Amino acid sequence: MMMIRKYALSAAIVLVLWALWLAWLWQPERQVRLHTSHFLKKVERQNWTAVKEMMAADFTDRWEHNKASAIEDAQMVFSQFVFVTIENRTESCDVSAPAAAIAHTRVKISGNGGGVVQLVMSRVNSLQQPFTFTWRKVGSAPWNWELIRVDQPELNIDPGAGF
Image (tube, rainbow, N blue to C red; front, side, top):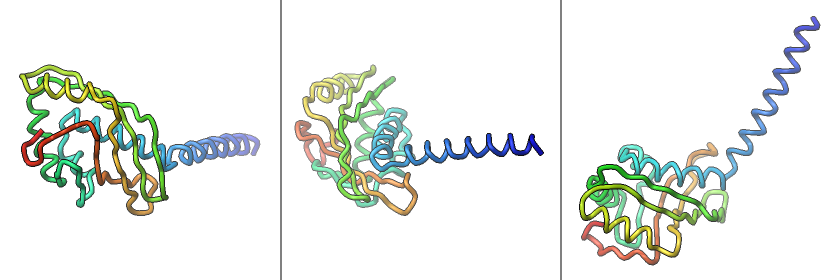
């Protein structure tokens, strides 16, 4: 009987600690920061199926991309890399409502490849302002967020011309 109480108390402590960790992990700001980092990691790994799954059907950006054209242009650019690393640091995250958030994230690209690669790295790495990733909460699960917009005011890309 004493052993059961001992194990029950240990199990209860573990369950409480696990519940506290999940409550911390599932906070909207933390989820948006994680989603931004995971999105960029999927781009780095050129996992376009996973990238597509993280983007909203109504995704748009100021360069006149929709979801399909953004992925197509990103595939074209990142196919030029022999290897690539995308470092990111979210400086701030604004959760304006329970279902919307913007992550202000610095991005640095390093890698090796053809001439386009050097241009991409130079352009992205010289930006003074962070990228903004706008996320929308979907469903009731705390981890269900989708990317609806990406912006970077200094980055000029001719609409329809690819990256």
